[in-house]
Amino acid sequence: MIKRLKKEQKINYQEIDHFSPLVRRLTAPNPSPFTLHGTGTFIIGNKEICIIDPGPKLDTHIDNILNSINRKLITHILITHTHKDHSPAAQELKKATNAKTYGFGPYPINNYVDKYEEGHDLDFKPDIFLKDGDIIRGSDWTIKSLHTPGHTSNHMCFGLEEEKLLFTGDHVMGWATTVIIPPDGNMSDYINSLKKLLLLDYSKYFPTHGSPITEPQKYVRALIAHRKMREKQILEELKTKKLFVKEMVPKFYSSTKRQLWKAAEKSVLATLIGLEEKGYVRCIENTKTDSKWSLIGK
Image 1: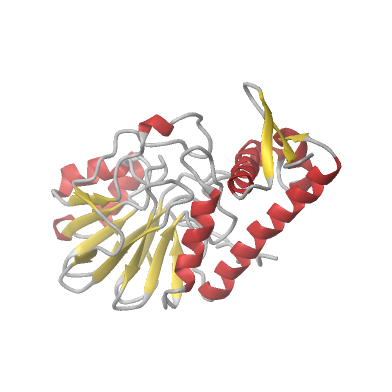
Image 2 (image 1 turned 90 degrees about the horizontal axis):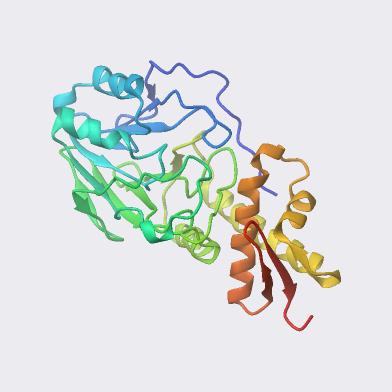
């Protein structure tokens, strides 16, 4: 079972949180069921400053960033992925600072189907396209890029090599499990990206939403176990009868707020697609709003 991390009790959206000599955070005032208190914008470095996930296009947050630090020192803007609570402010920051934007790439618009969570930023295109393993350097920091598809196909994590810290975006969150929304979101990719983190030696994770994760290896193993548990639950349910996704969600998410069930449907669907790829289940009916599934051979 995943142990929920303690949530910060109170957020001052004008104050910077200091975590280390190189790491600070300013939280955007966009609280929601999907963002917790809001998007955590990370400020890396002192002589040259790197911004990770500038957040939504909110004038108050953009002004807070520019007024809280010397804007002339901002040289890099890194994007973990192109959801609207992460990347839209990059454009305004770039205008104000002339900093370059970095990311895996734009959102693949051919995969744009539904608007769940905070939606997709279809306008963002990085100045610098990053690949897995690319190194970005500032005067007092070094960041390694890690491609971690799953939540979105263009998701990246960023490792601060001097302090062995990993900025995990929405790949690993500090307060809830990650929503996987097909077709761009892919459960098999997500689990493989989690396993990838187990091979790395970062000592602490900083998610964009929620508290820092101080036992990252243990936490990631728990996330993988949680997804495997969900697979087993689905297979058990399908042993007795064929089911629509909407019929499964109340069984698995009875303790979750109903307003989040729509997103939960997408994660269940992603799990089913992953099981279909493994040859365990098949889709036997599609409607405009749902799909019906059975075990192979049933």
